[in-house]
Image 1 (cartoon, rainbow, N blue to C red):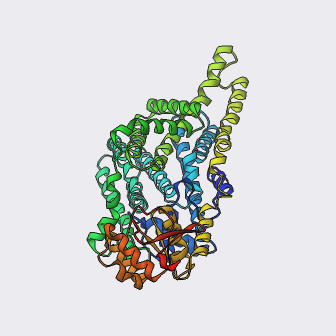
Image 2 (image 1 turned 180 degrees about the vertical axis):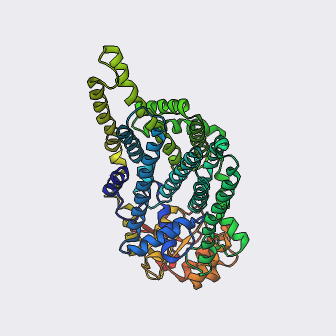
Image 3 (image 1 turned 90 degrees about the vertical axis):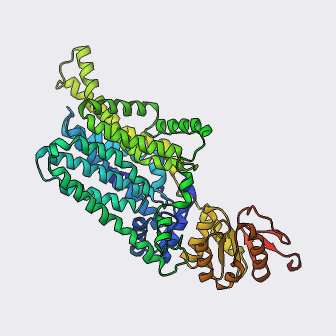
Length: 520
């Protein structure tokens, strides 16, 4: 039920097509790579690319909308599985009945579904909801491993599945590796129940991990076809490693200057307070964390390490959109919320019954109060949905698609359009290379032209630009632009931060025409 409700929420607010909303500019790159059989920006995201290609092949009408639907389906799947995991967790020690536990788990999962960050990523084309799904699958497999060890049943299939999921998940987003400290702590806590089987189960997990990581073989295979989207051109071991390790982004990891850390921590606190409806929701999360500690300290430690690892990474990652890395942290916190809601449902009726002498927990007054509390608990996700609807409803969001339409309509035949930002670059890549609109147009990102792989890709796609790009680096970009302007109509979408000697500018719709004075 939780997954169906979440999917309905996302379907009602889904972006109609290509969008830049919610820091979603990368969607154009992913879509262009999927449509051309290419390689998107580091780390290449092979698992996501294969799923996106399959989704587009099954429903080819509108690739961008299909990419949005893929995100919604992954998020809804994560919500459904989280509800099932929360129910299993609570059933291990809750004093409430199975029906009550099920409703509590559903309420907690739906509150996470309506949290602003997960919801925001569920309605655009991005990798983060698939990352959330992989995380919840891992948590469920680890929990089932624990159940198997306690029951004396074979436990290796659960860890083998966890290894496979981790490998495939790392093929979607490398940040999934941040679950490892929590997972290691959980396995260590269960070593006695697992006994001698633990070593064999860990070996099975390693085999599953290797099998999952084999998805990265897709990247050199795709690059071998020389597609128009071919980041790092990973046909050699060196280029492959540069891509999958995200070399060009390494400086961003723990790259926030010390002076900005207080502001980052304040932003983390602000996000934490609003994820589950406000301060009262945060208090229930903390109450749940306390209750989990009382009943299952090992799970408390494992989930706590997950929240800590993702929080540190997000706070220290030096980009303005690093808040999306907190989705797994809020996923673990949703389990705490489930425990907090369960405690509320258990403690309040009992306390009031004792205070007013209305009988024990099974009395009519207590049952009536419990039923009223259950109804109120189901309002928790509704309140979040109402609160965050305006910022996550993208049904009327057309900025990116309108830009593409106007830019291609404004460009003269054989135009070269210069870009600098991710939003304009990836949107035009999607239209020109992915959808095949205006095949006479070349889209050139001036920040990438210093890289050999990018110049090779451009030369293969646009041979007439190859000679102008020989020996070009960023300091010589002005010479390249001057040479191109002499042969083809030249436009820009963004500020280029480079001198343009001998070229004059003229606004043409959403573009700026660059030309020599004699051409005017």
